[in-house]
Length: 255
Image (cartoon, rainbow, N blue to C red; front, side, top):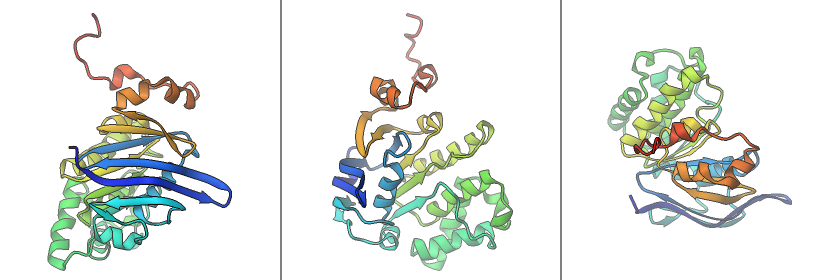
């Protein structure tokens, strides 16, 4: 898992005089789940928007799958395998779950009708939404809308899935199905970049993590390494994760 699927070099984004990201060099390795944490205003959602193509960078470049995509549109990137799942679900409320996925597969993913049908049922199964296939999206509870958001992205058969706080707003009881959905996407061979404030949800799946602050990378490494960093703990204002819950049991805890 060493080949780079996506790289940024000197990536920056400013809004007027406000510099949100500055000189960001980032590598996303094929097959990994890269977790991104950081305080509010760190530039996390802006980074995801830049990678997905919904906004252009003010500086720097983005390479994806060996090609410079810095100035490519979001639609072009979606057709080449970059899918985005948003923090606030955005389904077509009057359509069924199945119809939502078909639209994504056909128009975002650019799949043929036959391929789209196969991709849709695969996405439903992976996100455990098959029983909800004929329900109107507007009638779904928040948990199932979150899963639908992931399923819509998966239906386009992406290589890279960008997740923006998909666990946000859910109760502790509702988190496991969303975690399972993201895990299933990863097991299907999709590379994932996941921005999240619910850190213990992220650590359940992430294979690597970075922490952003003031538009720059503060720490990078395994989830355990990043969350153990004194600098990372400090920016979370003393809200420290329970490292006993996220660290693997290597048999030395009682040594």
